[in-house]
Image (cartoon, rainbow, N blue to C red; front, side):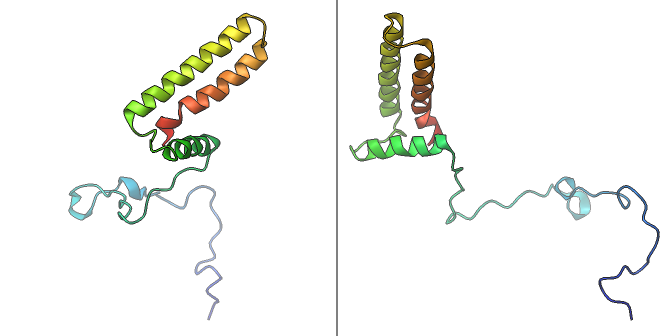
Length: 123
């Protein structure tokens, strides 16, 4: 008896796919009613959050606010937070205009401020 590791019919290998390819995500159920859909995650399992520098920065900013009894998920707090960062950006632009910081420093600081400014949307 041949081993299960050996092919049942040792035919010559034909290049390309072995016949018709079925895409299961696009198949209808038997009888043609409805489409197959992915199963949602159970309620007790939170969706995985990407571990990115932006996510870690947002979590750090949120922890800062939570320690003060606020949250960046509150639209009013988020608006005030963004307005404050816009003021800091204006201060940086004034420093650049007065020759206190150069173009490279302004770009670097602007990138940092933008990362912080996006924190409420990342949460």
